[in-house]
Image (cartoon, rainbow, N blue to C red; front, side, top):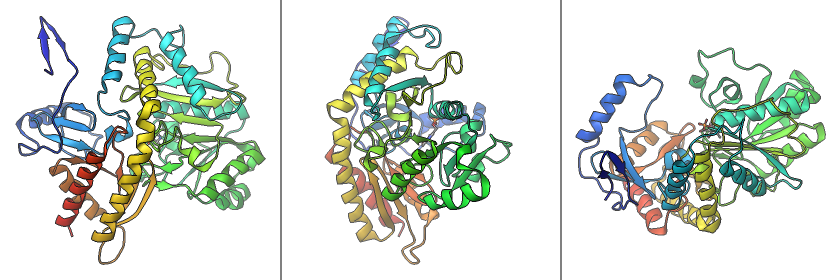
Length: 439
Ligand code: PLP
């Protein structure tokens, strides 16, 4: 039923897929190896793939490789496939929109999907007095927009970000990134006038930066992830977030929340900041926003969005097809998936804590909703254990569970928000079995 040939046109019907995990060949199997070899022949040598997984199709929380092996997905294409893979409503919205209009250029013309989406995003934003939206193709591009808007709005240059942060890989966003040295090595000089201080340490801004490096009235923006993603799923302190807001208010600094990973329902609420009762001035969203179609959004408080005509733009940003996917995504999140993230997240955290208590190699289960991190430690020394983390991830993969690491030795658990109880329990069972083989 998956691929029906109609003359020369290949169409896909609404797919069905068997349960996961289901492993029937060695991994990678012969068909996967063909894809991998082809990729290796031409792909720029910049990636280090997590697994030899060549994906053929996916539905809901299940990913199938070229050889028919099925994996339970606790990674969602790195927190992207929020409504699950190929949700029929998202697929339908994409197909319908593509049949009508694929491109018009939002910087030059108006389209109904982009207009409707921006109105929805402005409504979802937690700002009191209105919001303005700029649509991009990715998270890093939306971050670039936030950098430009904050500088233009304030007329100031300095930008502050936190150690462990990941804000993207274009040279502006990369200057704010501070999670792995290799991400920057050889690419300098990057954007100047960026300073980093330890995450969760507000005193370092006031007592060090403002005394030693710059005056507060020279600072355009502070960029914060409510939960640091690539940095290791480190959760912000309540006190830190509250004081960060006051500090920005006091010095008229723009507070930018990078909600690219924490946003769009993943934490059980629209935005990670809402868990702290803190409202930023700019929210940057991407990843889960369009269930896998490329889209990013910069959502600014009306009063902050003071950049004028022809100051910024994009050829593809806010393209009709990703916007249609985002509108379907919002409907699905509002009609249950966001609430499901909160409920399943609680179940997942409890199950993980059970494994941590019994196996003694997992520590510090943390996060909100279905954005959960846990450290892998040595049973003997209690220290972070990156090598053991690597072995656990590989054992899980061979058993049909996709997980990703982050930070020094953390595992992140970010399944699609449509996951159900049985899938949570099966995934945790596989993780427990994998851990048993490496202790
Ligand atoms: N900011 C955060 C918090 C992210 O997690 C990422 C991607 O992982 C980015 C920015 C960059 O987004 P993109 O890869 O869509 O450019």
